[in-house]
Length: 105
Image 1 (cartoon, rainbow, N blue to C red):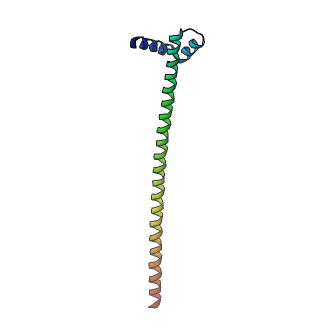
Image 2: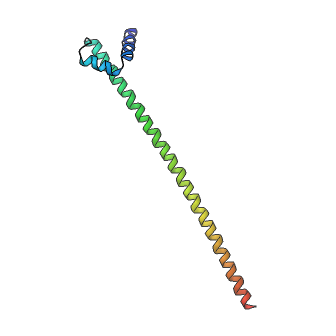
Image 3: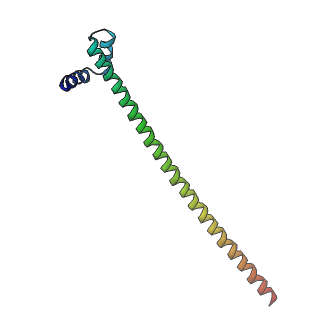
C-alpha cells in the first residue's frame, strides 16, 4: 500500500502543483486519486507555510539580536561620554582649586 502512495506522490511531484490542481479541477482523477492529489496539494501548502513561518521567526531573531547589539553600542557610547564628562569636570575643579590657591599666595 505504501508503495502505491509513494508512486502517486512521485507522479504528483513530477507534474507539479499547478498541473495537479488543474487535473483535479478538470476531473482527470478518479475519487481515490483526486483525494490523494488534494492531500498532496495541502501537504505542499503546509510545507510552504512552515518554511515561511520559520523564515519569519529567524528574521525576527536576527532583528532582535541586531537591536540588542545596537543598544549595547549606544550604552557603551553613553558610558564613554559620562567618563569623559567626569574627567573634564575633575580637571576644571582642579584648575579652579589651583587658581584659587595661587591667588592666595
